[in-house]
Length: 307
Image (tube, rainbow, N blue to C red):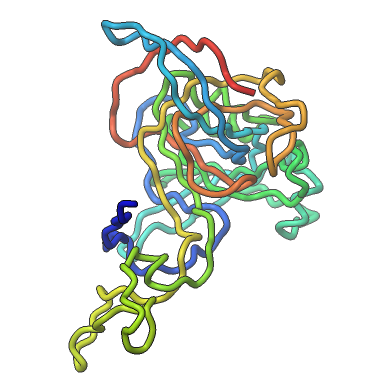
């Protein structure tokens, strides 16, 4: 039987390899557009399946197979509008206008004040963001405590104030089918692992000194480098994937298997079918944003989806 060869893996692009601070990612860049729209949405990873489709943008329109990730996207609720001003020390929040219609489940996350102060819109500000919170109580993931996340906004001030007075924001208002999006998520955590599993270092022979699952040389004694494979944290990192295709946005319940999705349950709200895989385990918070790198519109005709 042939010997399986696996070269040393582990890109030096991701450093330091530390655990993420939160269970959901922190988006640091939002695409700048002139349209009146929200630049992101939040969902929960359900699992994976596959579908058959026919691409419409190619000359040979043949049936194609593709793995897909299902993400449940219950409606979001607006919490506040934050006005930012750029300073020499970074961006600072000037004022924050809170929404009047808040759910009682929000008290599980933050302390709600009984009396709401009426904040005025500042005359001079550089940009603003919309703070929203999720509704996990509408899903079957088994929790009620919502997540509070900032979403980027583009457009005029009237559009932003109209969003604050809305009861719910749905995925159909933000994204469309056959559109490319960026996916921000926290990968599956695997704890502290050795250099063999973490970086793919090959095993030493059984007579080697001081163990077989170790690195042969740690480098210079007086100038040790972090480039040598060491044991440490593996997984639970923030990762961003660009240009993931949205096959379908729907609320049809026929996608549910008879016993529900493995380790998730039954989908009760709107969901998104993304091409390929997405980082993280089931029930992980996934943030979808407008793609920062422009791509062509990809038109498809879905034939069947495996349940």
